[in-house]
Image (cartoon, rainbow, N blue to C red; front, side):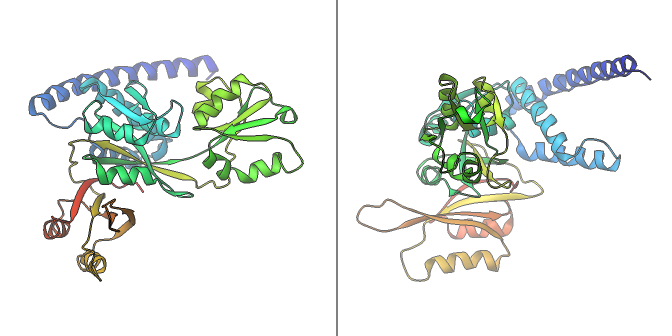
Length: 359
């Protein structure tokens, strides 16, 4: 079989795929009409995960070429197109365009969605809470740098719910107009990017060079600035480099290949259905008395609930040192053992959401 025959075979398969996708979207339209009538939720991450789980198992059982990551990448875009057909919705994210948060948002809501780039995490929360957008995407923690304090503070202060989490590997690139590193006299980036790419910078731009490292508000802005100065470069994401037409000189320059950021998808009034593996987030403000926090946490141990995160933030009460505790644990709010705790501590616990556990 020659190349032309193989290409004809691919064209035929592409035609079949297009026909099946169009048929799927016709069913999606009917689903959308039904959901509008019943006023039910369009975004169902637990349903999407179940589909990917089923297809991944099917591919593995049939010795298919596609692994789980490939299936997820393909079908996340199919899901995004489907949601836009059911009901087009706005998504706010911590900008600017080309940021890692933008990349995380597109990984779930696809290229067709309407996005609103906002300058602060507070603005994302405000837009979700007031209903100007349906969803918001913000970072919550990085496994190298720790938690994002502003996100936790806003979870304490705003009336929003967590509907999903997005763990995303963070990769940095060195991008610039000239591939001769000796000509580079300035490198732009965000402070956290400089820290996470320290080894690369020491190897290629050590103490003997006169290169200036200029901190800017975002890696996307760094990419834009590098396009204006031919003797400069930026440490940024691939998507930011592509957005600004900046050639990538070196890819994956971060010190740790396990560098991962966890993002949250926020909404005002969505409660997810129970899935096969869920995570729940709550806020707890225990009495300012000896042993109160220990007694509260003991409840989880006694009911066999695994805690995955606990972090304190100031409650910002005048003339007093009190704290909110942000707690993640395995399970869904409808689980009987979780219900017992939520009901027993209803005056001290704020429920923030149950959602598919991905990390």
